[in-house]
Length: 252
Image 1: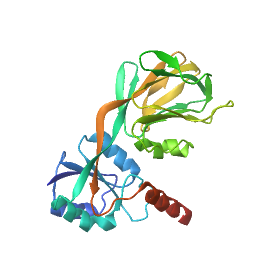
Image 2: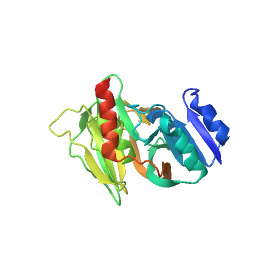
Image 3: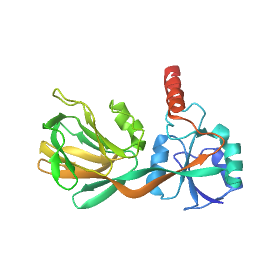
Image 4: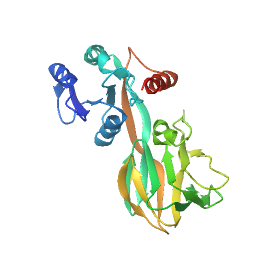
């Protein structure tokens, strides 16, 4: 089997993988060795199925992975024997701004620069309509789907989504009486228009550009599907992932 490897460091486990597989630039699967950031980087770089592996058993930054380097011997055996499944995890998000398109795994975010940014939120299906009745002022906003709801969205007190049929709009430290997240159908297009001041527009933490007063950008689900490799010998549930991560953080 030909595989690709994405990692931020030259981990010793890489040499073990190379002894068993043909490591190439674009293999049948991509092994993401590290934390959540490494997984997202791999998913943005490759359109092949991603196998995320944490670099230690209790790594707190490893929400997307069921496995750690402790499991590597069984992972290698399972890959050779085809004892794994490829799961369609999510559709990547599409950001449309300034006549360009960008694709994200986790989220699209608008963040204030020097002062709070004010914006309006619309939903575009057959027609454009405001889905939040007021101009929102604060640090910005995050738009995410199911797979990204456990990342920036969760740290901003947004909901964890258990369905890929919805998207979530979570406000960041906003003023006013209504600060709740908005959940919309994944077939919708979310459009955000800057009412005052400006902000930095990002996709998975990468700068897409500054949006100024009067500018608008839209977020929708794309037809680009993120595929994840799931080994059959070990699959964590959401509850097990949350327990592992919380225990690790309490230990620290």
